[in-house]
Amino acid sequence: MKHFALVCLGVALLAGCRKDDVIVCAVSPVSTIFSDLRAAAPPVQTFAFDLGQAQSLRTSGGATVAFGANAFLAPNGSLATGQATLRMREIYTVPDMLLANIPTMSNYGQMLISGGEFDIQVWQGSNRLRMASNVSGVAQRLTLMSPVPTAGLDTTRMLLWNMPFTTRGQAAGAGRDTLAWQLVGGTVPSTAGYYSAALPLDSISRWNIDQFWYAYQSRGTAIVETEVTTSSASTVTRVYFRPVGFNGLAIGYNSAATRWICNLPIGADMVAVVLQERGGQLYYGTERFTVRATSVLTPTLQALSSAEIIQRIRQL
Image (cartoon, rainbow, N blue to C red; front, side, top):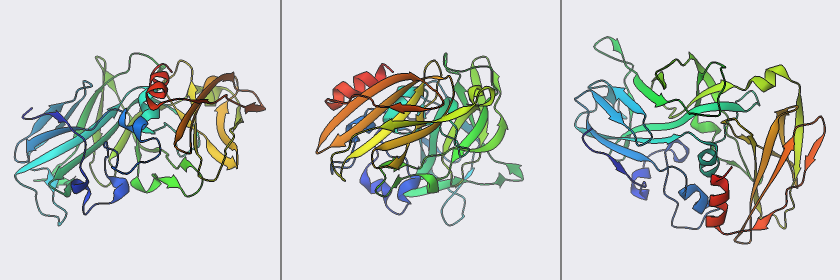
C-alpha cells in the first residue's frame, strides 16, 4: 500500500459528477437533518495508487481490494494514466447501517441479512474513473476480500447485490429514503473467514454481500405499522426495524401522515427504532416487539442530544 488515509470529501471533489453517485462522508457546512448521526458513520477511506501498476489495498476493517494495472478509463473513454485515488466505505454492523442510513432492504420488499456493505469508487482529480471491460483481451474486475462478520448470520448462502444511484435520495415530502438492493450475482463463497467477490466498477458503486432472511420463507408475513406523532410538515421522521440476533436493518415507509409500515416475518423478534427532528431538536425512541398478524407500535420518543442518540444506536 503506497498511501492510506481517512478523509472527508471536500466540496471541490463533487464538481462535474452526479450528486447521488458520489460517496460523501463529510456533512455540508449548511445544517442538514441528522447530519451529526451521519458524521458518526464509518468514514470514507482513501488510497492513492499508480494506475500503471497492479494493486492490493487493505482497509481499516480488514478487507482487501485488488485489481490489475492499466485497468481504468477516463470519462472520455481513454486509458487513464498516472496517479488516482480509490475511495471506499465499509459497513459491517447494524448500528453503522443505521447511522449511514443504508438499510438492507431488497427490491423484493424484504429485509436482507448482511455480510458487509461497500461503497467503492476510483477518482483522478475531479473525474470519476471506470473500470475497462477488458485489457489486452483480459476481462477486468476488482476483487473484494472482506471479513465474514462474527455474528448475525446463518447458513443461508450469501449473494452479491448492488444499488443503482437512481434509487437513492429522499422522496419529496415523505421523509423516507427509496433504498433498495438489487440482486446481480450468484453465490459469494467464503474461505478462512473471508468472502471473495469480483466487482465490475461501472456506474454502480454500492455493493452488498447479503443473504435472503430465511424467516420470510419459513413463516407468513405481516405489515407492521408504527404510529409516530409529527408536529408540523417540517418534521422529519425515520423508522427502522432491527431483527434481534441478525445483521440486517429494514426501513419503514410512510403510508399516512403519522404511520410507517414494513413487511416483516410473523413471529420475528424485532426492535423498532425511531429518529425524528422537530424544530432543530432530535428525538429518539425504540420498542421491542414480536411480529403478529396485526401490529401497531407506538414507541415513546425522548428529546436527546446527537451524542446521546449515537451512544444508544451503538448499543442496538
